[in-house]
Image 1 (cartoon, rainbow, N blue to C red):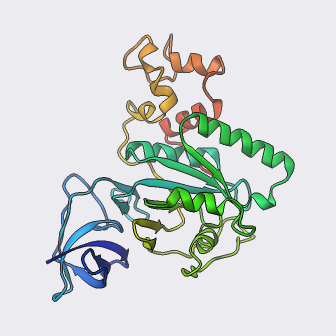
Image 2: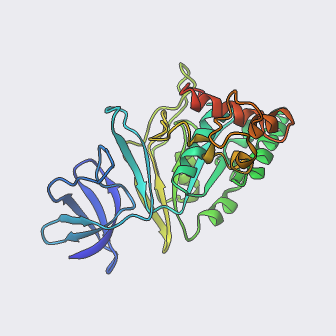
Length: 304
């Protein structure tokens, strides 16, 4: 039995790198694994540490996870889909246009990161196509998220801007990189890791959304200790198992004020003497963030 890390999943077969010789092995999963209290369509995720039998090409056991990231399953509404396990940070590639990544989508991504207690970094790509007004707006967006404690960076995959800084951010960590299709994620990764030659796609004129080029999550290791997980372009980022009473806890700026509300179970919607609502009125809290909170609370779709 060897210990290894899952680098790629194609549904029934897994590419596992053994931690002794660093060789890749194609393995199947032994029987059916049930994960306690977790309804998922896939029992193993990229980044999972496993015990496997190289002779039988079979995964025998999944080792305990430090963390994991899930999204709602596209096909089974009651189930979730494991995107990755044992990650150090999440990176969201976003764009102001072609296609536009909404602040609502970004906030859902950040709430997801908060629920999994994983640091998040926002990377706005394609800065070479923004005009002066858009660059000024982007600076304000950057100030907002930096103020909230999140990492923020700007890049141009085509012009090579910000690439070395991003490479340094990824160094020595396991990073899950996500983003809408069309934001230049694959182009950015090809710039970071030229040997990958990932398939890239043009923006479809019809919807201003990219065409999906990645079907399965896959992990790459450009150097010892640095691992990058490329996940499929995310159209939907459903919030999994978050109670309405808990939602505000995943907004760090709300957490700081919650003890000041009149009611300990304040939902920050229409209760009297709510410190969060007062903070919005006084300009201490960002209105776009509060709107995102309301949208998630009501389960509206503010991601477009």
